[in-house]
Length: 296
Image (cartoon, rainbow, N blue to C red; front, side, top):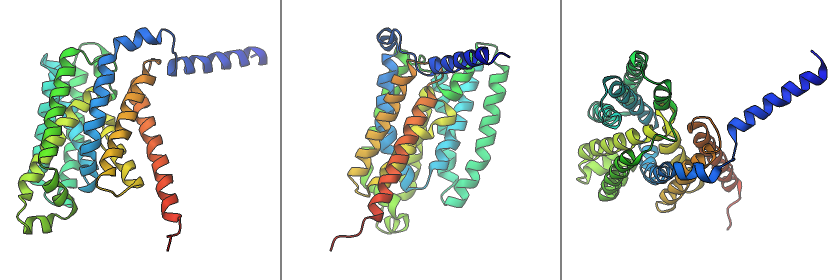
């Protein structure tokens, strides 16, 4: 091929890639169409950041992924049989969360149960999607998220469930914090650790189920785990960690949505990239603080 022609083809290919990633023509009109998604992202950033702090303290990041797989299976089944996708997603998430909460009291048992549930849920979900005769965008959206999927009824569901999760977290914040830091001492002091653990798993199942509707089943960790993990790298304060986790979650979700509006790709790569970038910066800041000599 002629070198000049080859260069032109290469340039055109690069331009096409960048236009798919970032294209801000008619941005204002597009933003008006997806304002529900922006609101949903902000809400999920707040609640996901808060619950993510306890997920990290209780070493349950793996559980989030396990719940998301069963939530994906439930949503896929609902899509196949013509039921409400949110209801199916919630059912799958709650079943898996309760199973993990009841059977996985110890970390080793919990990880074994999650390791069994994850491939089972993913396999069921793929089966249901393969049988679904509808649009491929609906199938793909359950895995990677859909920016235009948040209509008014779905936004109402998301806000209502998020409020329930937020109220539940605030109601049991102190005993949950005690149980997360030292379950044995909490039990000895009379904290109902069994009930607290199960209630927390239910709340986690609820927020994972609604997160699947925005970012997809495969990448829920970016909203529920990564912001809290980044916050814990920067601070150990019981006040600052939740504040930072919420801030990082909102920036990741809303920032990812705002960028995704200008592209033609699924929403999840934008959210996960911002979330990961924040984590890297937080990790570097944390390392710098550790390397700094103590002042005497």
